[in-house]
Every structure is written in C-alpha cells, then in structure tokens.
Image (tube, rainbow, N blue to C red; front, side, top):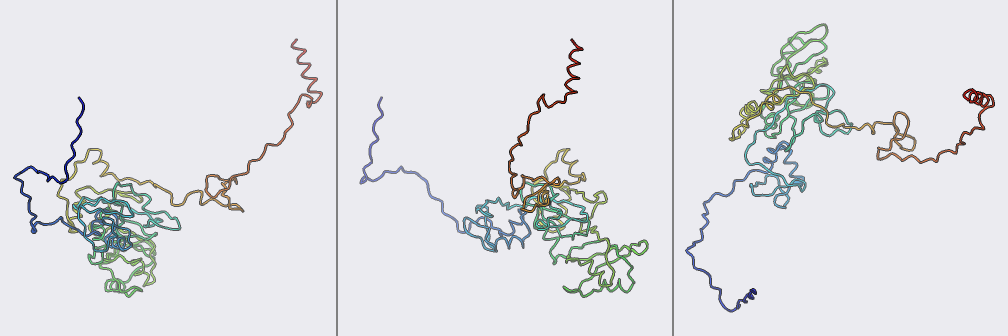
Length: 371
C-alpha cells in the first residue's frame, strides 16, 4: 500500500492545541540557589597546590570558568566548567580523604621539582597518583635529613606551613662545640638575624663525644636555614641536622633513611581533626588484606626518572658531536651527527698462488700418502 503524502498545514489556520490541566510551576524566589565555593579553595582541595599557589595560578590567567578567564576570589558551582590550561578539571565540592606520605629524607636531595642543575630531587621517588599531585609540607635543605611529609590536600599542607598556625618543628642538632648556660638562655629569648629576630621555644642538651655535642630544639617557624643560623650566631657550626617531628607527626624509628610509609585512613582522619578541616561523611573504604599489608609496610622508593640523562653528561667532540666513552659517535642523541658511510676498501682475495712453495710441496706429499 502506497504511503499517502503528508498534508501541508495552512499557515493562516490557527493551530489547535490539546487542552490539559497542566499548570506551570512558579519559581519561588526564596528557593536557595546552587551552593558556591571559592575557586582557589576547590583547586587546593583537588591537590593542585596551596591556596596561595592557586591564587597566583588564577591571577596568571590560566584558569577559565565557562570559557571566561577567572578572577581571584571568584565563586563557582558544581554546574560550572572549570579548565586549567584549556584542560577540563573535575572539582569535588565535598571533602575527600587525602593521602599522606612520610619520607625519611637523606642528605643530598633537594625538595624542589624544578632544578636547572639537575640534582636528585625527592619528587623523583614519589609514587604516581591518578588525580592531583603531591605537595611537600615544608622544606629541608640539601644537607638536612629527617621527616618530610607529602599530602594531596592543599588545605592540610597550608595548615602545617602557614605562620599563623605556629606548628612546632623538632630537630636533632649536632654542633662542633658546646653551648654555655648563658648562650642557651639567649637562644630561648631571641637573637637578631638578618631577616628579623628568631628564637627556640625549647633547647635541651643530649650529650655528645669529644668536640661534638647533640641538642634537641623546638621552634615554630620555617625560615630558610633558621636552625643553622641561630647556632652560627655563636660561631658554632652545625655538622648534622635532622628533623624528627612536625606537629603531631613523628618520624617512626622503623622508617630508615630513604624509606617511605603511607599513613592509614584512621591516621589521616586524625590529622584532619587536628587541623580543624572537614572530615568526609562517607564511610572509610574497606581495604583488602593485601592493601592493609601494603599500607603498613615501609618501602624503599625507586627513582622514576633521571633528571639528567646519560647522553647529556657525555663529552662532546670538536664539532659538537656526542661521543660515547669508547670514542664512537652516539647517534641516539638529537644533536649528534650521523657518521659518514665509508665504502669498503678494495681488498685482494687471497689466491692459491700466494702460498709459498714449501707449503704447496708439503700439501702435495700429504695427498700422495692418502692415495
């Protein structure tokens, strides 16, 4: 059966609409709108850095909200599209349980992600995470060892490091020499340094052998080389410096140099309560037996990448080519020049006539003997 043609509607004929009892709902002006939160706070919760870092990121113009460049202090809702460097970012408006990692930093490593000299960095050993990034809570200079805390929560890191919270830092210090009672009292009262007065909240002698003596000091600031400069004010150089406690977190004795330990979920909840940060309402995830064993096991991290490749350290030739230790040109390096292909030398094939007469005579005698 042929399909009938569709009848065209007369444009002058009014459209007849079906009658219904539907009444459009009126929007109540008192209805609360979608909750908003500060953009820099959400970026910090996502583990991209501290609040101060996120404010600088927004001020640089790299963050957009719904296609518009964001401004510092802007508020967003869960329906807004936030992009960082043109890449969409999923922001969580509910607090999630962060990750906290303890690392016993040895001497010889820096606490920085960008180093033009290519020195060994603590960030080269951190395990990979799916979302966010690791934030170092405080810094230790290259010659200082001890407790270093990493977290994925910018809020928690900010509470540890911001001067207004005055979180205690405890160090074990070995100096070449010995302090007098007057010098110890002066260190508690305060000494004028180049960047202002500084003092120890507590200083306790821990003994020593020979010219070296140990001291336990506690202070509430994190200025650059502050502990070393306080002792150097009395011409007493520090030969060993080790951080053993930061706030409520102590360096466990079982975590040796260069080893890491991930805190359990209950311990992370305790840190959030100590800092006064919101704790997620969702129940803690049930871990498998393997995950429980892994969470409480101290492990030695492996370097994930080399900050300076071996090719960059190799010597260069007169014309800029990169040479291997044996002197051959390494073609794997981008700046290396390919060696010129040389034609094989014309070599004369050895013939029977080249043999000496005695050898030919000996060979003929052997053939006669066989016959």
